[in-house]
Image (cartoon, one colour):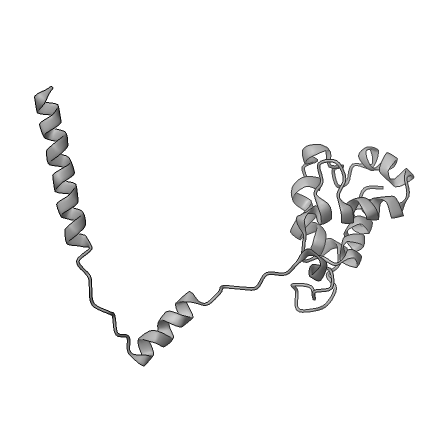
Length: 145
């Protein structure tokens, strides 16, 4: 029992000495002009944040033009609709799309934009415009009739 207390006391004492030695920096660090510039570049933000309302009006990631339904499908929709994950109707499976098509295209567009059951809003394609999402829905419907 005494050995354990002695060991704990020695460990605490060595820890204090180590911490004291590590915190011995007292001087101010002087940087040259080039060093300050390099440090500022390293610490600069990597990007910008866009609010959800700003995203739909933002230009498309492909250089400012609208992406085709095929492009949007392959970038954002294929993961779930290609495999039929989480109840998503599988691309190219008419029997899975028939009931949805019967509800009308406006309903499907609204579901794609706002989300539906397991599908998050915009299918997580937050840089897609509403028109690009509608084109992706048209592409999936046309390929699944």
